[in-house]
Image (spheres, helix red, strand yellow):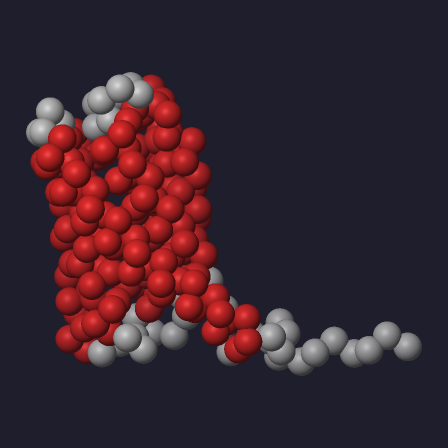
Length: 194
């Protein structure tokens, strides 16, 4: 059996997507620093989990690339977005990076669908697609920040992606608690105390 903490990574992704949607609709113009701690927390968890998965490959096969590398990109973006919001830095550079990371997410999702790599490849594809498109649209939302209508559209894309990942993550928690109930590190249960 392998170590599987995709559920943690997916819940973190859900939190980040919802925070970004909320930022775009409610806080971008009037109090951008307000959600910075949430961005930093999301960024820290995404970066730590993604970096560990990318370097150690705890999952079978390409799941480490698809989820580890995407979590690392997502986490780093959110961590630095949190810092940028707190320090009032310009977000243009992060927006450009978000476009590139968003395109990578769409490519990963399309390839997962093409190869049938998860238990529900269509659902996984839709999650990656919506998350990636949300990332791609973040730069125009920043550049067109006066257009609340466009920011609401981007926020809706992000919320749709969050909903897919939330359903996946919470369903996975339900299954993982059963499938890992008898898991012990090293493969054998500890000897009973005498």
